[in-house]
Length: 128
Image (cartoon, rainbow, N blue to C red; front, side, top):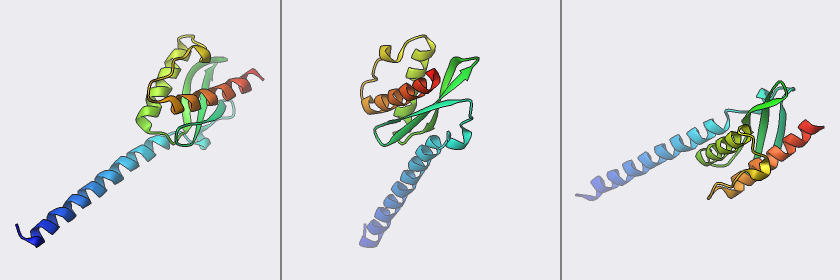
């Protein structure tokens, strides 16, 4: 293969990598942006904590003063890890576990701690 053909393959390879990186980053940004401050209603309780890559804000979803779910308002951690941890914590809370009874998911300690910190703040507000 001549030099021009090799250069073209290298440039094409870099272009493909750049497009893939943009797609992955856009998907992560889109998922993180699903919940935002404008969607937080006044009758919902929110709390914030420090996650692996920044602030995590969680909203308690209440129905007749009973917890029916959690909503991510803001997070900067990896979407897949964050969603796995949040879903696990939400399931445990809905099954009647207290925050102290919920186990840390291996490999996601900082994300777990940020969500728990946010929930502690939200539950404090709820108790007031």
